Amino acid sequence: MIDRIIDEIPRFFTYYTLIFLLEAMGRTIAMTVVGCTVGYVLGFAIAVLRTTRSPLLWPLRAFGALYVEIFRRIPFLVILFIVMFAIQATGWRVSLLLVAIVSICVVATAFLSEIIRAGLESVPKAQLEAAATLNFGFARTILLVVLPQSWKVILPPAFAFMVMFIKDTSLASQMGVVELTFTGKVLMNRGFSPFLVYGVVLAGYFALSYPLSRLGGYLEKRLGAPRDRKARKLLWQAPDSPGRDVLGRQG
Image: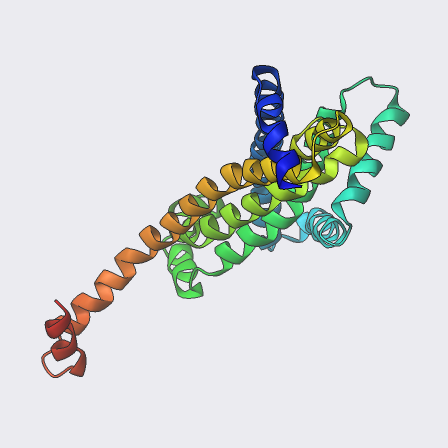
């Protein structure tokens, strides 16, 4: 097996094969970024809508909650085929790549809506009451009070979801989208060793997901750092705090 892989490497890593793989990686990351970006915008709208209390918006809140509960529980592969058949029923001629992107938007909207709603609800109610006391409207409260605090809670899990969905885009290969996993099938059909082919595919997924996961980890630490520094400062300033000696020895 190792001899076969070594023998195939010069034939595998040719210019056209590398271009084929890079184009597939580009489609994979494009599907994820576009789908999750649209999902973030629509999910934000649903999350904000579900925080309202107006009786007139009750039908929209119910629809948003129903949408989230349904599409968070349907497998992504099933959603791919539902979207594909729904678009075909309208008579529109669209590419399979667009079908996959629309499917990702549908799923990302449901999941990111819950992530955003959790971030919005993390803001203490006392601050919302203070905003109401200052006669802030709903839009000003969201923009000036809730968002500046909640996005620190929202971003880390949102990046984690995006990293997860880079791997889930491989399911789009089942309907013929030429993404990274599909290229593995094509190259295997050309006679290359499956260990060589899927080893390169694995490296491709790692190259796409690792930078995003590192960026998410950096943002999580960066956004949490001010609170940690504030806590250390308060401990240092407290004259009788036992943490003063500990921080002094550490610093």
